[in-house]
Length: 216
Image 1 (tube, rainbow, N blue to C red):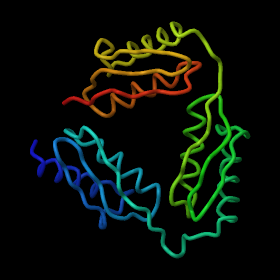
Image 2: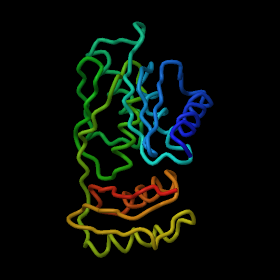
Image 3: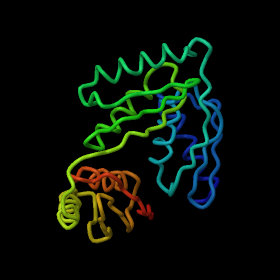
Image 4: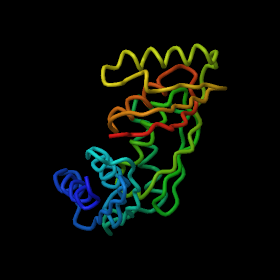
């Protein structure tokens, strides 16, 4: 696929997704790397645009340089916005009470700790969906059990083999002090995300270094 063909396919995918207002999004492509520039009306749209681009066959990486420009009706005072973010976090049963938030000019910083990565990601998603949030910085620390490295590697390897979409033989796993390093190749971003999610799901994992290459 040429750069122009890839750019066109990504533009079509952005136009196809009803969650994205793509009128102010510019797309460029070079050797499989797609860059998104322009403005969108919410953080949710910025993230959805990146996901849409990653769905396109031939995309090896997405550089998301979109800027969130809130409409006047969505701009909020920091104190009011923080109150709404904390309320949304509290109402989500997956987010523990150990998570807190700071707000400055529409930028939300999440702090505190969770035992699992899915709780950390849930807090990020909840905060990003609150009206008036321009960006989320996730500084939540993952705490949890500290099992043996061999146990973690074995658990992740079994998870890879259970997943029908993953070729476990093409992926390598290294673990040390709760950090997992993944290397190898997959055939799509969907497979990439499945591999990373499987690594995070292992007990005791506090960090995942993702060196997986999407190779078409």
